[in-house]
Image (cartoon, rainbow, N blue to C red):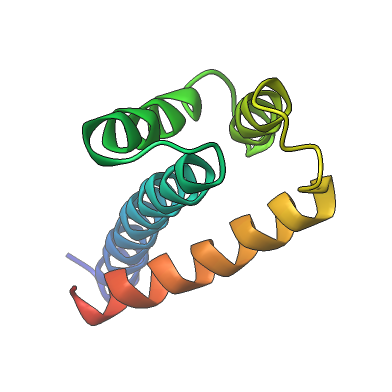
Length: 108
């Protein structure tokens, strides 16, 4: 195997690891977002956990974060939580993603 091939293999492994960590961080962010929304709409215990899982599942509808955003926005609106703005949701998503990525990187 040439040096170039070894280098290419190294880059491919790093890319795969980065993508896996990104996927895990996004799923963790979605679970945390679900818990945050569950609290806002008055869910607790098993209902809150089930809701958080439904937010994680919503992310598989399409690429990007819009599917998750639409789900939580719709659920907040349906429960009369119009006081939570779109900007609040997006900011919370960003904050939770950074938090989740740090946790994944730290191995927790």
